[in-house]
Image (cartoon, rainbow, N blue to C red):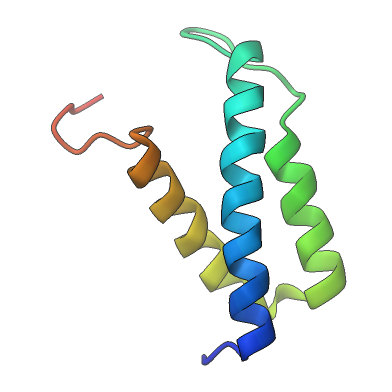
Amino acid sequence: FRPTHTELCVLLVYGAAFHVAHTVAAAWGGPGFFSLWYPPAGLRFALFWVFGARLTPMVALTELLVQIAAGVVNFADPE
């Protein structure tokens, strides 16, 4: 799989939008509960609607990298 230049640009914008939406959604979640309102899922749905499921691996990688960069995924903590 090799994304086009346009798809790479879209993934960069998506990464930034995902980070903002995930930060906003954090206010509605917490330990022991979660909210069904999760804006990043809507962004993901819109991205797949426009560009198709072909971007699925790259979207998953983008989301993982954004969460690692933001400190959401902490490899030092087993939980």
